[in-house]
Amino acid sequence: MKQLLEIIKHKNEALFIYGIVCLLGAMVCMVLSKYSTTQVMGISAWIKPLKFLLSVTLFVWTMGFYLQYLENQKQVIFYSWSAITLFSIELILIIYQTAQSKMSHFNVETPLDKFIFNMMAVIITLLMLHTLYIALLFFNQNQFSAPETIILAVKLSIVVTVLFAFEGFAMGAILKHTVGSEDGSAGLPIINWSKNYGDLRVAHFFGIHALQMIPLLTYLLAKTKRDVLIIAFIYFVFVSYTLVNALQGKPFIKL
Image (cartoon, rainbow, N blue to C red; front, side, top):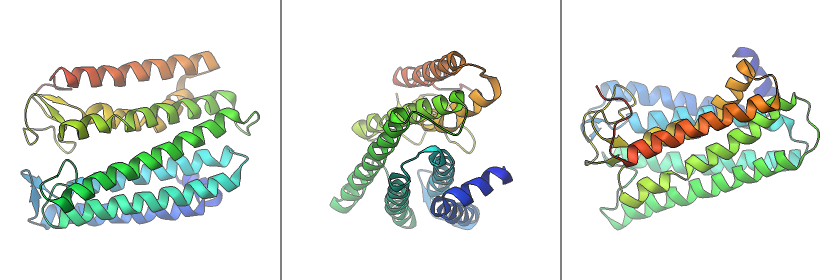
């Protein structure tokens, strides 16, 4: 892990530093989740920004590592600062709502709340479209300073990540993430996915973390490009299954 961080720091200092800032923010939210009395739907309001800050840290560090393989470094720099800017706005909006004991997502109670929710949707759409453009740059480039299996895994992981990031619109359409009940039902520890009903966050989580999982599984298991395609296909089917399962109102894990 230390070696990976050293590579990211050397190849993309902007995303490396931003990841550290988000990680420090996550630590602050962790402390606040223990000692603050601010709650939303029965749990500490600071859990939401904590999870987002950790997710953003992982995303920017992962992309910071992958982007070293692109020849078009002007586009890499542009994307890096695009991600930093858009994520910063998103996180500020989430933390702003959290500090007021309000839901940041699916909250349309007041005109301001609705504006904030819609603004976050626009921000993530812009970021994912830009990320998809990065995927196109990978597909269009012919030579890489990395094994073909790893590069193919990176390409496919970005596509799957973008696809299931847009799955968030399924939640936005119904203004909740629970299928079969209202949000706030009993959930699994820490992640808080519903124990008794369908939860659209499951597919969203596994989908966006295809960015890490497909290349990791490729590194551990794949020897040929065919192996990579099989890994990516199985992972895609798994995430799709969690989505269909949630849409049917079934919990990911029933306890």
